[in-house]
Amino acid sequence: MTNTCLEFKEIAKLWQKLKTRKQKEKGKREDNLEDTAKTGKLTEYQQFCREKRLEGLDFREISSLWKKNKEKR
Image (cartoon, rainbow, N blue to C red; front, side, top):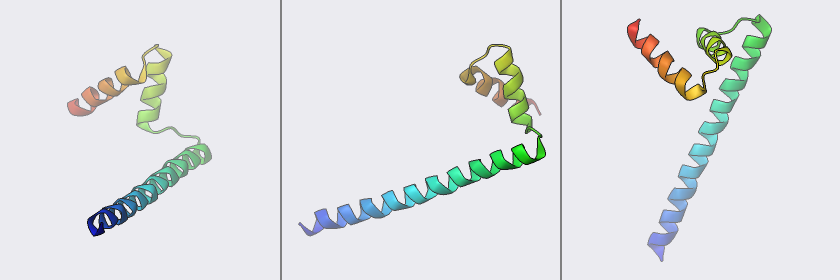
């Protein structure tokens, strides 16, 4: 019985850490969106995605192209 309680407590701690990390990441993404909105400038990746989406590619294809181009640099 003690082992089960300890396992549950550890799971609860891990869940809380994961939840906190996700909230921080969400905040960073929102900050990036706000910065982009304020400056009106897109990042290199955002511009690349925009161009490729207009060409009709899906995000999986865009991702692989981005990785290939990044490796060439």
